[in-house]
Length: 448
Image (cartoon, rainbow, N blue to C red; front, side, top):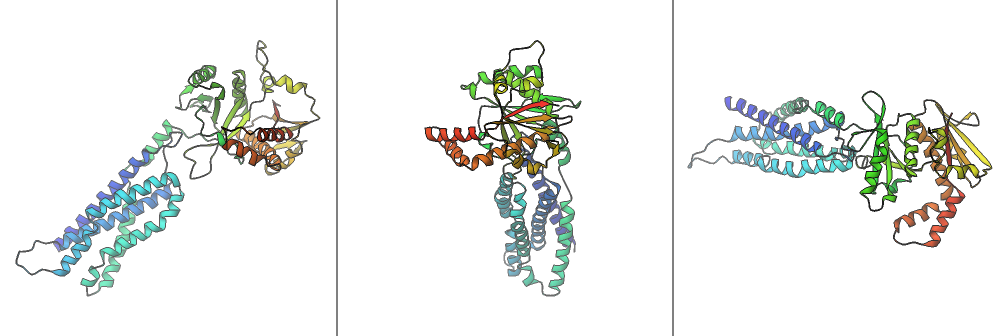
């Protein structure tokens, strides 16, 4: 009886130690994988509980095997009769000893950890059933020989053992040896997540991997003021923006290709976004890339999606400068052109055209009739318009222009040109320019 109690204690202690080892190893490995914004990989509570159950089950199976091995392992005299049944039991349990522990940690565990970085939450959907089957097979393996040895009440004994095993597994899975909540909070505080706006338009993503992109973050600071930050989350004064871009350009061979990527909080008032754009325009930066949310679970941790935007010179009238600095070319050219049609899109709590509210999903169709060579679309921003409200309209406008251009195979022509950047097909370029001119993306902007 004493040996039975001692084997149970040894088995439980082994299971707890192994479970603690896996828990610490998981958290250590998780901290080694940061996404493109240096944010920690946060495991959802439901997924974490499944991880814990799996680790607890494996630990309990190995602990059970260690306890059984201790129970049946006894010293034997050289000339004593061999107990074949006991040897068979010990040989079966040896599979779940150090050899299996090494294999499981090196192959299964690390494979799952590395794969989860690329598969996201779909990792659980893919490997849930194989994990359950592995636990069942290993548990039954520990009883393979015991069932042939135990003759009396063997099904009753195994049923009781299974119930105790399941209860202890659930109890063990509730233990967290690492205070992951404090760890997550500390990492998020050091590298806050930027809640960028969402967009249904995804046809501007081809620029995402260029090295010559300067990332500027715009978010609320601790005093809830809109502030600028660099990629390392260091605060930037608005007046230092010019020097930052100048220093960045000096490190590039082709500084004319520099693109500024704006990674901004979706709830920021749009006037700060437009003030930022005007500052870029005054630095001769005519284009801007808005980073928007990437909802693809497989790639969300590696990059944001993007919207490419040509900054409108009309912002000069929206933000008058004191002292009347020199005018930026472009806006006066638009003013001199005689557009036959100007469509005013009023952006506030909703979207209004001709004093009629237009649902967002109907906006692309509404804009299509005004995307032509003789028309221009005017964005009018009301009070309390957020960055997300602006991105919604911009995405709908881009979608409308893209669908019109796609009627003349613009999408295929553009794709061929981008895939063959070192060969210039004059006819293709001329055709692309013709379609772009026929369905231009032109806007002016002002505040109410």
